[in-house]
Length: 146
Image 1 (cartoon, rainbow, N blue to C red):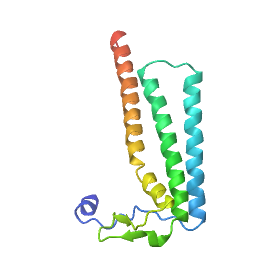
Image 2 (tube, rainbow, N blue to C red; image 1 turned 180 degrees about the horizontal axis):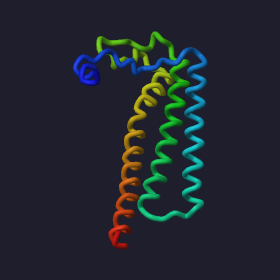
Image 3 (cartoon, one colour; image 1 turned 45 degrees about the vertical axis):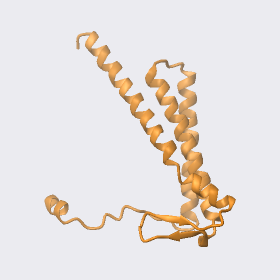
Image 4 (cartoon, rainbow, N blue to C red; image 1 turned 30 degrees about the vertical axis):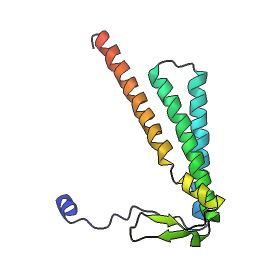
């Protein structure tokens, strides 16, 4: 059965559209919750005075992800107030164009859609931090003869 699902896949239906307006409220609250959780995690790392490269990368991850969440939060707010006529859907499913003349809302909407410029480096910092933790454990266990 699993082979059949791999050979003849159906629609994944992975995109979940939030209902208006409750879905947006819950989504925005999740962004705020994640911002506060990352802030607490950053503070807890600093308070505990953890040292080492991995901890610094983990702190950078917290900062970048909190900034990304803030940017996404603002982007969702701007999207609510953006005039639907300001967006032009092209033939490509993933491509939408802003129609001029450009306003402040449109500029903010465009800037917040570049959130991957913050998200990708954050995940890279997380990767570097976890790799550093792994290497320190491997080095410690090799040194102790385990």
